[in-house]
Image (cartoon, each protein chain N blue to C red):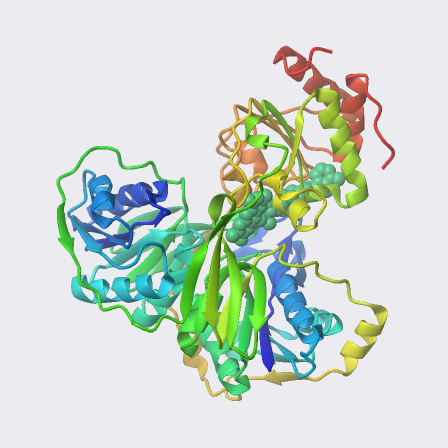
Length: 266
Length: 321
Ligand SMILES: Cc1cc2nc3c(=O)[nH]c(=O)nc-3n(C[C@H](O)[C@H](O)[C@H](O)COP(=O)(O)OP(=O)(O)OC[C@H]3O[C@@H](n4cnc5c(N)ncnc54)[C@H](O)[C@@H]3O)c2cc1C
């Protein structure tokens, strides 16, 4: 059995940041493995470690530049078996990759790999589109479930029994026929830290790099009817009173406020 | 230009976001003087159609298939109705179920999809606004297509209230017989001894607390104030507090007199659960954290400095963390 995990390196913005052009200035960004994908990797690795699942291979796929290999290696260090990274000058030059482009790129790799199960994150922390996994499933013509916070796999029956986390503390209990794409929600497991041994081993695990031609696509994949036209810091809607001064002063202000409000008698 | 909006319901109840869609959809249709049609799939469709009959809706299509949401039924029904009506805009909620079928429908129809839209300017085409990087920035996108789909953020548009006089038409969708996805039921989670929705004062802790061992600091503050302890999602995901303490979209919706958010950034799914608090106070080192957009009072400072001072203000003793 093969599990493909889509992994994205996401950008995190520093507290103080600046915008240049239509994106955050590179100097204000730090990169990390997407939080949701961390849970997806862990879920796949746990499945591969479960009793009777000796033959489970976990492959990660990333669309991203060379810098993203640090993140990919992290996933390998946590137990994925091998990795695929797709990148190309045409992708580098695109303003951004829209949903369709991402789904098409990931589908090209998935069609090559023919996984039984694809695990994606519910969303990427930076763009928060929350749509790539389901779009990928539709493109592949397989089943799917979005926002999964519990997964039990019956590989023989070819069924994933999942819980989908709906709003307001309600969970939907659903059976999904394999092959399928599941988008994984945080909290489904406890992602491990990479061990030193894992990090060493990860250096030797295969990481294949493909360009567009390798995956049977061409530059037209980046063509998009959607164009980013602006990025700006939102005007603060609220007018919060910010207490200034030393921690002692601000704590006193807040304490006085709470006393005035009658929250505490003391 | 015409607009097709897809209503949402769960366990017999039309969800509020359905009425918000009507407001957003009407605004979109008005930009070019087109029709706004609404479709409701499954459940007691006639009762839902009654409730969806608000001012500005032209036709309500009912698809009487199944009781609860199933993404394949929704995808088939919406795809087929879309083919018949050929709307410019397909509008759906940016909800957990919305994100379970709209991306598939958009793929099938070959129309661009923009999710979690918080505003738009329609005219010749559409320019949408959404948030990125955890709400620290907003971005706008021009969509240059004859047809497109958007999911709109819940609670951004007011609910359509005024009664309407829409036509109601059953739509006979041909939904696939062999469903590869079967919904077996629902379960409520997050019960237990504490009900944070009952509290007058909530002291709420987020990822800024860094480690489980530091939680007692916030616990002590809550005790000192006679308040109830709640949290953002990562604290519960990490198993540091039980699920019944989680505020937000997938946790509890709370409306206390005072909500003190400590080391919480104010992500949209968190804010969905606490924006109804009377007074919101934020303690966060990051002045650009979105929590300050909805806070009434704030302290831009390290919680590990402020919270011990605060505990001492009330004669308590801060634990060593
Ligand atoms: C489908 C879905 C459902 C979700 N449901 C929920 C939900 O119900 N509830 C929920 O909360 N989230 C929910 N989320 C997650 C949400 O998107 C955010 O990831 C989450 O709310 C972030 O929690 P946080 O603010 O504690 O952490 P972060 O966003 O990491 O913020 C931590 C904050 O702490 C501040 N900080 C750090 N150190 C200090 C310090 N020493 N002193 C003071 N401040 C400090 C930082 O500046 C930062 O602003 C959901 C997400 C999805 C996709």
